[in-house]
Image (tube, rainbow, N blue to C red; front, top):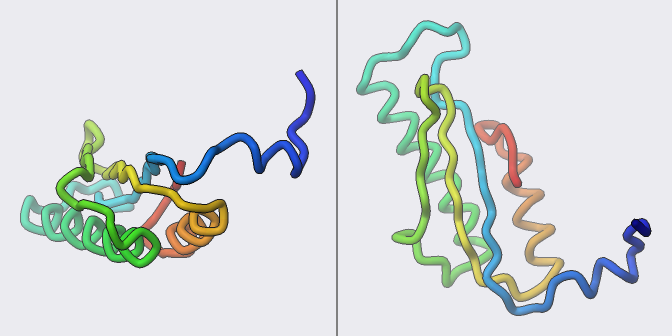
Length: 109
């Protein structure tokens, strides 16, 4: 398998295209003590709203009704999948950077 070079990278994705982005954040208690249901719901909503605001800044036409939400088995993590209409590599890079810089985001795939 040959290594991917910068000239190869530009041909891997044809823009515009639908591009799914998975964003994971911690919503449970870091101490391992389960938060109350109300606290957990507040954290879920807060995380979702923060992520949505970032995604909308970079993909204004994103339809929030299409966002997929999954909670981990022990309710410690929340996973959001946002499929945006990507128009450029620069758009994706800026979106990934802002998501990764946010303090409540643990991982972006």
